[in-house]
Length: 421
Ligand SMILES: [Zn+2]
Image (cartoon, rainbow, N blue to C red):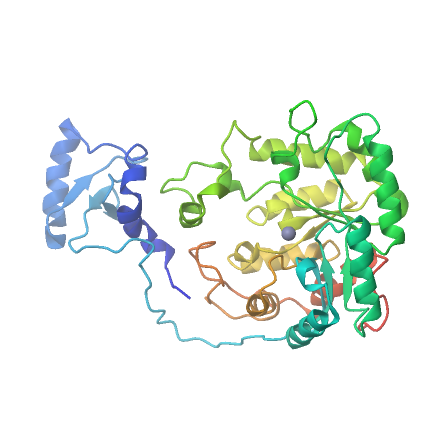
């Protein structure tokens, strides 16, 4: 695990981002500022005489960093890029890794469809789940029709039939006259076959899914209303992933929090106006939630509001039919331990654990953030976040709700007995 300190990030960006940042940074000062520059240079003499001055609100030129208020300096030694910068962490503090969850957990956001095909792979999965403290995995892989039936047959024939549940999907192809009747009939059949919910509705919905006439299918398109109402009638939750992290919609420059990730995976960038803007997608999603108050919706990834919990609080306050799942946004909870604890305590009935990508080694990071008061420890993916994580130290009652109780409350098809009181 690489280690970085955000205060020094900017130094490192020089090497990686010099080309990118040239347009964003201010040109070197001239005229009167130039004289100040000379002064700053002398002031900075102890640092090697490489200073220039900037005015309040200005940024240092590329390759320089602010060493005193208003003074920019060029590092005297070659500085590694953010890709290579891995400082040793010298903080000595108590460590409490948590390999297994304190209470049995339900993973609301599993992607394990490929591993539900045989009794052997179920056995293998259960072994891993037992080590992690996962009692139930929900396959949020939109499995429908014949595939759903064969998957349910494998699960039900195994000794582990209470360890796995499966969600069905919605086929958004050819939305138009006649579409809704077919979609609702398929949903009825899938629920009969054992599906416990709809999900995960993919992020493609809103970003790329199109109607037969080539136009984008809006998340709140009225032609889809019957399927959401059917989910309400059937009392099954709709687990929906909308959009991408906010920074994916922004330019890839030295101000972008996800700079390294977007440089590594350039296809994650969402360019506007080729695609709808982040807030446009959020507005469509919120209208969908509001128009179907009898349908339970679960917003994946905290609705991408982990970095703005006040916004998620407002959404929860306005829409009692909405819940959220906390997968793949641990870096946002773990960087604001006090605010996140306050939020999760206040909204303890609305948030559920989920992991998304099935990587057993990553679950213990969630347990550690939720359960301990540990400080300044690594996250599992350094390109997601340049910062360290802190434990929230959630009380047992809140942990139980996030780990299993809330999922049981809104998902009647889950095994309902045998959980800690
Ligand atoms: Zn997912």
